Length: 407
Ligand code: RNT
Ligand code: ZN
Image 1: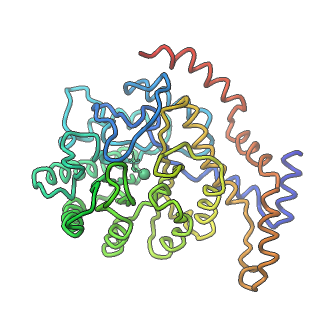
Image 2 (image 1 turned 180 degrees about the vertical axis):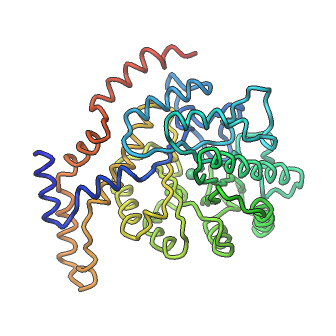
């Protein structure tokens, strides 16, 4: 079937394919730098804090140049508007290493140069894990003042850096705080850590920064921190609702496996004017597998579009798989998110059937939509983005010639 015929079929369902293609192409996707090196970073912190990259595929990017090269290679096969999502642990040190509480904009100006070159935006994250100052699994909620103050300073610096990046790129930069803070076993005090976290956040967000969109990322549990997480969903939702200038970031891997993350979006979009996301694929836990074009992702994006959240959404990706070619993983995971977005934009509004109680037709029509020739529209999206179809062969060649040569 040709694209034109596919387009006709969609239009019979009341779908404007051209509008969907344009909207998909102009919706920025913030691509996480950390897929390229298994969240290692340049300050040799690594993961920890309940997150883990598993696998040992050859070719991990080991420095700034390698990470830039791999990211660029991946981007050459990714259509649409892109951003790069950085962690503070990816500071580029040219005048000696600095600890995380002493990082400055200058350590990220090389990334700004890179972003300018590639005409992409940047988002930012303090790195509150993989560091000797994470004490007993705790950072901002630690009972130890010195530990808490160190991470408060780090988060403050991160906001200042994000603001500097925004200045340099004339852009708004999302600064997302995720902390691992939790307990392996049954707590004696659930309130104390949350109270300290609240106070730490108040300190971090004390001043407004014009180029920064602040958000906080909740989580249900981490490996080794199974019994309690200070920054739970209720904690951050309440915190954000009480302030209005900090937003709750929804990572679809951060809930109980039977909870439907897509269902939460319409509730958030009714109350917040910014709805940030981390898109991932949790397999039995927050495993951060490469997202696939599956039912979960389709529903997530369909909800973003039909709840009216797309214009408020900040879509970021958060996966890291060290067991397969990392560049191919970047492309496949980003394509999956983009496919799900395009699919959502091609979904007709069936709310009339729901509202008139015609649930029989609603079920039948929803099933019918699954068989529309989506592949033709996706191929056209790639063609319009000048993305060659043979990306796997090129990446395989890159693996053999570049990645495998790395030590
Ligand atoms: C961890 C959070 C967090 C990290 C990244 C590296 O569970 O999802 O977003 O994955 O910041
Ligand atoms: Zn996340």
